[in-house]
Length: 257
Image (cartoon, rainbow, N blue to C red; front, side, top):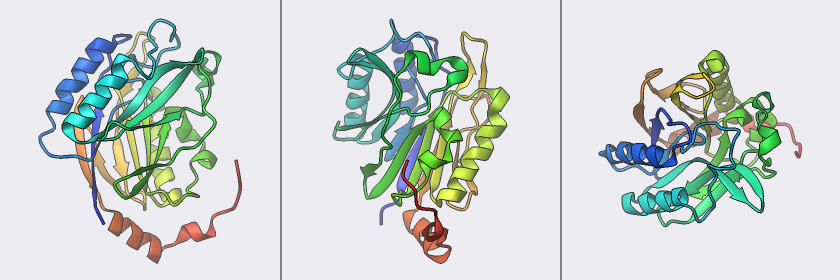
């Protein structure tokens, strides 16, 4: 039963500058000296969290997707993060999970952040997504999704739930608490990758990227406010042993969303 080695890249984002952001992440990915299975980047990692997608959106044939595919194949690792994608005259906050083969799984953010008017410019996703990767079942979600536990409820017996985010400092206590809660209630590993730095809206981001085990214990984290790469080894056998001993998921409520 293979462990999963994951790299969390907590980084500043340059506002509306995809070229500079891709160059920055290329340098950071090249700094990873050990072999990893998965690299996780923040939400809207090429632009920052923008409500002005018209001139900065890309397509699924665009430069960022090609960049992700090239690096995934070159490094023999999966790479994921969310990007502003235009498709069928709609804009999506879309998470792309690029496998080492170049194959892509995607998830469109379901819960759009109405406090910033995200729902006015982006189309919400409808489907929860489970990604199958190296014997692991992975559930990807985006930022505001973290506040909605019904949507993330582990009815698929997934092994890892992860969130990519632009979650500001002023609400970081909620980020910390909810990541831990999602791990405990779903008895899975939970990963949160957040950005640092300031954006054009004068919001401050302090990171707090972290990994929790299935009992809610923090097993890896990053330094607040700092650009940093954190690498963690997830042990599926250990998680399944805990689930077997403390099989709380068998008592979960049945529902459909």
